[in-house]
Image 1 (tube, rainbow, N blue to C red):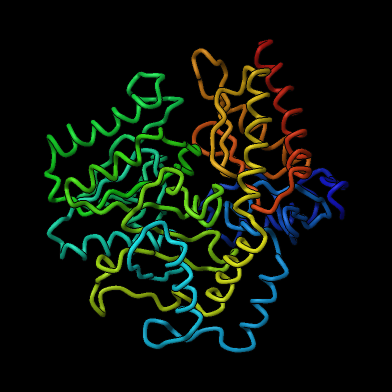
Image 2: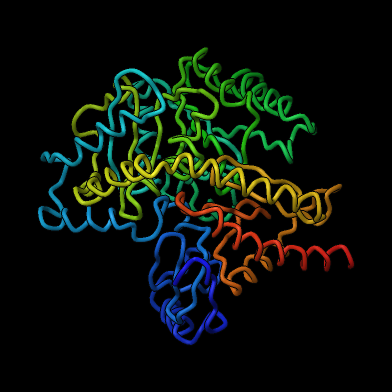
Length: 453
């Protein structure tokens, strides 16, 4: 199916085969997650996805920012095949194998901090966050029990990670008590600054002042805090890009109090923003960085990369049977090489700038688009009912997402009313334009209905 012919809807989704699988799914799988629409994937190629009924879609989800090199990249498939001829598992917690060492060496090379570094491998983003919590507290031998996280953050759903998470109440409901000694601060959201200012820099200053004056000035002492954990760009919270002074200011606060700065790059890392790590857009060096999602193109793998002097948990304190699986490590090495060889950081920047430009043109035309923000191919388009009141267009977002699905564009939301655009990094401008044309047509219709009410 050539790019010029996509998307192609053979039967209105969900088709008959998809409906049968959705029905079977509901009977045997715990429904503790939220599906956006009944898309039942059969296979994928590059930035194109095919469902079980023969429909063809432009994929702007990339498996939720996982398939950064696209569906079924030939070099990824070849790496899997080569690995399966050797070993599929032999636990890194008790023994040794070269692929884990080679991948760790490569991650150390591209890490967003200088000096000597070490790596810990797990299976998922939540596991990486759990490991970072233990590494930070363990480094201080629990003399610093507190951790500062942020409202709007998403770090995972295991008990430690979900304690740091603060994007939706349902994520905490029924699970108390959670991890003790976690304090949430305000993440600066320039479009909806909680400090009642339209100036992004002032918003950033106020968020930093809240930490210094209230969290550290009135509640706990800085020498009791092990780590500040932050997403350089909030993902589930709404693809929120902070003001340019915020992350450098966090680094300064951390340095003043001897606190570790941990950046959660599970969604924003591995080239998603046009740099290896989103934090690099601000020239800030963290102490620890967590990675998962795109690191192994869909195979279960995560990593914590940190300064060697901090990665000092003694033997027996933390491990994972499947962490650093040899097949996943081989694939991750190939993913990094593909991103380098195919210049996908450059492509993410180029295509991302084009997407932002097109949506900003639409924002001038349409009342429903309140904000367009992002870095590289991590882009949020926030929908509002009125630009003056900024009332979130939650119902309209759901309508938009479902109509896009029916017309052959796979896209989901983030935050309350933001379109989340995170396609494979190797998507072309031509294919992206086809998706934007469809989305623009849907937004124009919804916008007209909204303003004519």
